[in-house]
Image (tube, rainbow, N blue to C red; front, side, top):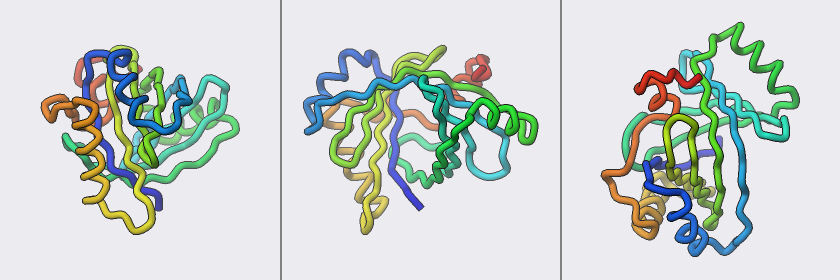
Amino acid sequence: MPANVEIKARIASVDALLPLAQALSDDKHLQRIHQDDSFFAVPHGRLKLRVFSDGSGELIHYHRPDAAGPKLSDYVLVPVADPDSLREALTRACGLVGRVRKHRILVLVGPTRIHLDQVEGLGEFLELEVVLQPGQTEADGTAIAHDLMARLGVEPSQLLQGAYLDLLRAQGAGGR
């Protein structure tokens, strides 16, 4: 099962952090992505349906502790041809917990995904996803995440726990 080590941090500005992220990347091609994530009530982990601006989607189930700092996440990702119908079916079957809409810039640094996110109703964030390669441990991924945090100037005090949905719900927006 695929796994990565993740961090999420509140940042002052995507525009200010973007040149630093690009300087770390061998691939200067940026991906700009609009994502609309619907979260569903499930007994274990989190289940979200991600829909992209081109109408394609993916269903993602993951387990990740809600803790600040680097944390291991394991996940299953399934491509979805008709995300709107699947959202309706999952809402009827499981219940919709909330939605998160964001504009994301993706910068690749080796196997690590740097996400610079502008989240509707929340603000601007950095996510690091250190994709673990065969033979790599959680400790290896944590060390890479800490190194990238330092190189990007992200302080431990900026780290967040939980998902964007949790932050939206905490401020009363409900993620809708």
